[in-house]
Image (tube, rainbow, N blue to C red):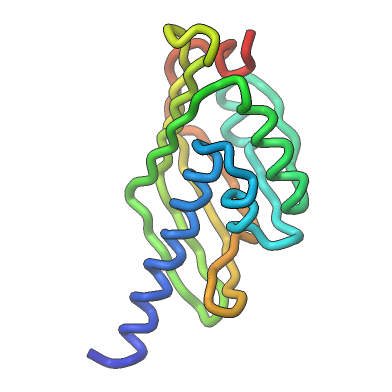
Length: 154
């Protein structure tokens, strides 16, 4: 195998690992882990998924804003984010990742209430040093089930 092939394979695994850290950071409510996946000026766009689910969600700009806003918004639910079918393409120090993410939200005060979403993540990344970081993540919804109100704690 060529060294180019090995490097591209290693980069693709690292790109997917970044999305795994994203999911773990949310699920563990770990702000340090969650922040470790974003560039300083990252953008999170949940509008496509929110629109399909029937609610508006603003575009979040900047690592600190993304981390604080999402962890606070999900603080009343236990979440599990499962990443599947990742497809990464590498072009120098830029990467594109498409993956499916199933996001279960269970209301902490009433575990019988939940909201489950299957979303498509379109992620743009940049390599900084030896790690890949998210520059932009756009989330679109494929299907959803459960009580939307559980997602908002009501």
